[in-house]
Image (tube, rainbow, N blue to C red; front, side, top):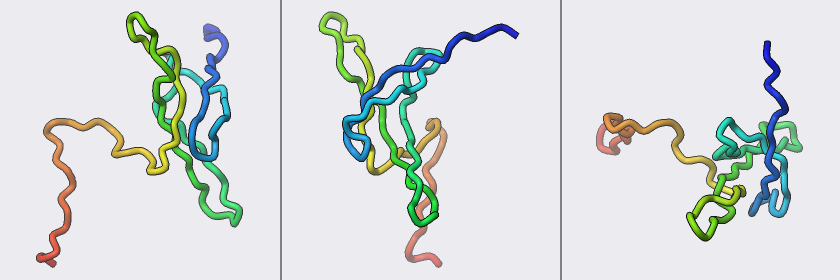
Length: 102
């Protein structure tokens, strides 16, 4: 089996929430970008299920000439991720229950 080389990481800053001001080494994918969302599980002190902090990837800045992204940072998203997955044109939203029918 061929050697794939070292795992690539990128120092990425976090803004907002409990991780504000910290910089973590985040693994980058085959395109050289970190993941779009970064989830951090925080254990519960009482032994319950962990709380998951969600951060969204946003551009850190753009270059002046051609507007390329100069890097990435993560912003705290207290509401968590929106509906995930692909949205096909033929997909219909889940029907909401009607109050008049039982």
